[in-house]
Amino acid sequence: MNTISIAWIGLPFFVGFLIYLIPKLDRYLAMGMAVASGVYALLLFTEQAPLTLQLLDNFGVTLVIDQLSGYFILTNALVTAAVILYCWQTGKTAFFYAQTIILHGSINAAFVCSDFISLYVALEVSGIAAFLLIAYPRSDRSIWVALRYLFVSNVAMLFYLVGAVLAYKANHSFGFASLRGAPPEALALIFLGLLVKGGIFVSGLWLPLTHSESETPVSAMLSGVVVKAGVYPLVRCALTLDEIDPIIRIFGVGTALLGVFYAVFEKDTKRMLAFHTVSQLGFILAAPVVGGFYALTHGLVKSALFLISGALPSRNFQELQHKPISTPVWIALVMASFSISGFPMLSGFGAKVLTTKNLLPWQVIAMNIAALGTAISFAKFIFLPRGGQTDIRPGFWPPVILLIGGLIAANVVYFDAYTVANIIKPLAIIGVGWLAYLVIFQKTILKLPRLLEQFEHLIGVMSLMLILLFWMVFP
Image (cartoon, rainbow, N blue to C red):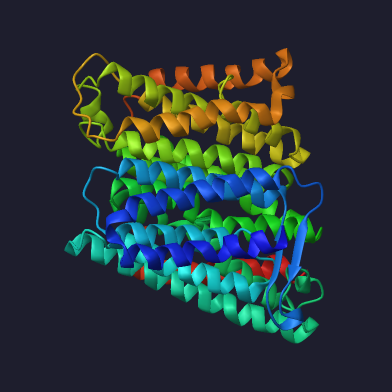
């Protein structure tokens, strides 16, 4: 298994290079790589013990591959396969598919890293590949959004790298466990970099514009898997060091509430989905021990929602209320919205129940409020008029069916969720959320300020977050 793992980590970069040499096979090579990652992830669930690879002693690469990694890798495989299927008949160049697979490979590498230096390399490679995909249309707007993303990402990783050096200086190791006994500034700097990369709390305010202004398949990749490259190390650190767990949970609750607050009032479909990505990342961090399953569910549903939103006749919810969409598209939209709201028979239900059971008492009320906000947000999609005609581009249905099918199949992870007590509470929250939407929020027009999302304020927000982290970790 060791040899297979090392080959699997390097294979996407070889395939990305091969796509340039054989451009006529670009789609097939890319799809083959996504399938290979999916098979590898399923193999991980059959392993009884975690696989640990110490490649270069304390100075180098430490990999930990277990079921937690398996959930994230499977998410990456399914989302990448769906994106490739979506782009199959769109005439995308070999460059697009090569960068998609390089992004896929770097994200996979981040999901198995257990030391700060190899994680730094993986995150930097993923940042460059994501930048190239965001800028792929070569329009002035896409290039500006991509450069904005790259600048924010690089500044965050500079903070992270300084923190990693300080942690090494204290413990002579780059492993995640080196945070134990490291100076507070090391923890604060490392966490700031990961919070920004993962789109967590106010550090993630770069995310809505980036995800909403990217092409539809790129938005699906960004929200489905790319931000999780920053979330995964936070989950792993929380599981490795008990003293860090409370900090991660605090940020999880704050992120869930902040994202859903913006999502409830947002009138643009893609921006609403982007803000809700921020919120759902909070659910992953709120209960790190079950964060892998929630990440899988969220990655599938959010990618499906972004792909479906690209088929809607408008991005404006107020306009969509007067433009009926075709019934098949509406059904797909409702199924994905049901899953993320926690409706039974879809894996979002099991993920929310499992997360709720692993919350600490002080988290319960706040996370229930976030779940209520989720129901209100996605009622905007559920109560759209149907029965109209929607122009569906070729290749739309295979990826959507793959992702929604994944949401149904993932129910096998937690069948124990299906008890009467567990079913009543989510249904009650969804019912209250729908009622609140129909009575209050459907006609409410409240435009929230975008001041903190502006480029010139994003670095200032990082500085404020750094002060907050110092205040949290010094005690």
